[in-house]
Image (tube, rainbow, N blue to C red; front, side):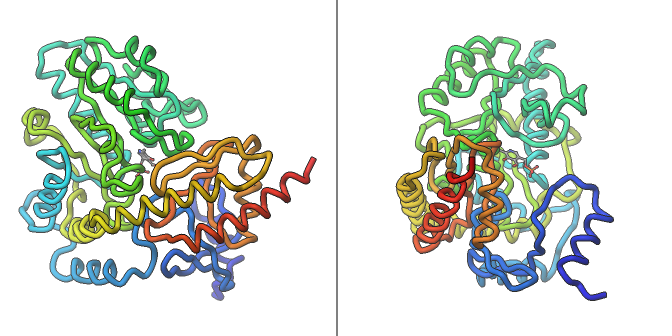
Length: 400
Ligand SMILES: Cc1ncc(COP(=O)(O)O)c(C=O)c1O
């Protein structure tokens, strides 16, 4: 069979569960921050597999780390000790607030584990009704039944109810709303320090500081979901750093293994002391191959010069996007290389026009274009983006 783009598209359409609408081209390879389709057309990648491919494509160091990790052990299960899992856990502990780590395979799974950890801590406290979880408007924590219950979007939730019970939704960045929602019955408060899917909204330092105090007052765990905003994305290794607020649990996933599936729950000794053999587990999580690769990615991303590059390029990106003079632009916001451009129209046509111009972009809700590129992207690509977006938005403006 000749694998023309059309035949691959038909093959997918005939055989995959249709959970995604895709543009009509087939990606074949990448290099640096550029992806290529089957016809050879190049696209500058402002998506990075949805905030995943932190080191871009064809990175020689990552390739060597993958090769090295593939020699020897790929999988052993968690029945046995292996060095890479222990070494990655030690590195994460050294570089964060945490004392202990549990590895999963995805972001939603990390959040499910965090829910279980919080419920177990509350269960051990002897308060049978301390089961409530507080999450926030526009949050995205994943697609499994617990994470989905904390993701308050009707389109995602309604057909799948009943979801995990006892979840209360408060207004993001609204202290009065959070104060009313968090009570003695609350066992955990889940928050993205910078919301991704919900439209690129950073939490204020004041809000995170309030949550820390209120959680301590009622004996609830504060959980930071840094699945999208962690691991250097916002220009510091962890996005909570500028606020000075440490959580009890932090969940990670997306970029941790440079494009391969992994998740992690980072937590304190105090919380971990409640989790005993049999309370939680996973077949694949923490395998020697994936953790060997993740250790390489973590070492690269946490280098001060790497993080400085993210901050500098991110500031330049916001500055240049703000210069676009279009009546369609409402706001440019974000931190580091996690930036949103809100328009007063549906961004779908802008993203589609981007394909013609050789740009990959993704939305965050109906009105926000989300820029979450490989963290290695540079100023020349920012200039190219701004030049092309200016043309695209000018074209949109002409339509009735
Ligand atoms: C903040 C946040 N949490 C959790 C998830 C779920 O991660 P995964 O798709 O790996 O299950 C996502 C995915 O977009 C996310 O952005």
